[in-house]
Length: 154
Image (cartoon, rainbow, N blue to C red; front, side):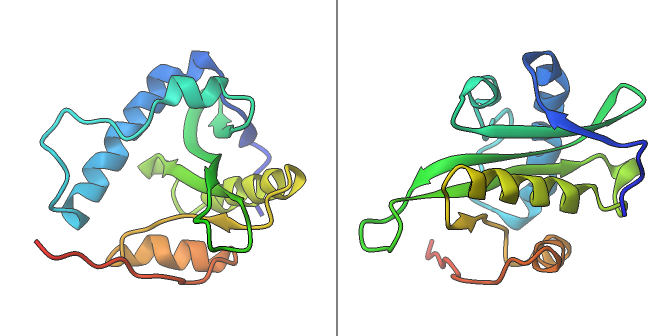
């Protein structure tokens, strides 16, 4: 059970500065898992656009006026041979290091899954680096299953 001190809400443009910091922290955390990432500075997302997109959902958790966690659901077009045309893609999952282990990511994922279903997406997906065992375990805990491994040759 997540403490009532933590408030889950939709992100606003006022949150953009801290969310851009979260993005850089995510990149720093994922860099050891991906040798193909360009040198800094890089950006994964157009967070301003995603926050403003009525077809997407960006959530944050705050406590005492400080944003401490984030995640989003965005629509993605499925491959033409799948049994669904679109699916909800979850990403931008970040929890400030001081607040990890408190169930915040699970709370965000559950809310994003609910949002996805209520918006007609029967499929919800995310990607995670194969060697990122803590993230894999966290996603399995909230119901995700391993589905596909992407391989590369350099």
